[in-house]
Amino acid sequence: MEDMFSGIVNWFEGVKAEFILNFVEKSRWKMLLTGLENTILITMMALCIGIGIGVMIAVIRCTWETNGKKMRPSIGKALLSLLNKIGVLYTTIIRGTPVVVQLLILYYIIFASSSNGMMVAVLSFGLNSGAYVAEIIRSGIMSIEKGQMEAGRSLGLNYPQTMWYVIAPQVLKNVLPTLANEFIVLLKETSVAGYVAVADLTFAGNRIRGVTFSAFMPLIAVALIYLVLVTGLTYLVGKLERRLRQGDNR
Image (cartoon, rainbow, N blue to C red):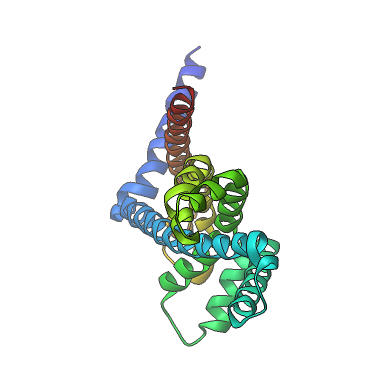
């Protein structure tokens, strides 16, 4: 019994020593705090870029799919066709290649002369997110009944006005939970930003591990922080979905 108690005490003493070594000494916990701030900043900025690109490509592709064949041969039709093909090519390439490869291509090839890893990471994750957001919004637009567009046009609204005042509010309600889940996925994907020397959360954990030669404590801390963030966001997404379902039942 005494041996077991002594073993438990020794284990707690070891955990305490590891905690002090990895986080307390030289205020190494500040590395994790800075990494968390950078991770959230990259995620938020990349999401804004992704939504902007995604909305633009979704509208172009949906416009071509619904009205492209009906348009008379003109410069406008040719331009719309070209933009639609660019959108298809963009979503195919981005969704078909790993995000870490895209990040490395941008950093070491396209922006090889730049040392701003944060900017490259934001742009890379934004471009990656844009392809998925485009498909989310496109599917949302295509799920709206064609009668909605015809009803808007019959009221005297032109195509852009009908899209903005009639279609967009319904699409937003349908795709909002999926967009929120895309935000969660994007948050986890930013964990590879360290490949271009960006001091994100995972990079901070690796730096602590490299200094203390202790892998367990810093990596478990990083995993727990991600788990708390994702769990909190998942809870908020669940509440959002329930609120939207309540609105449908009224």
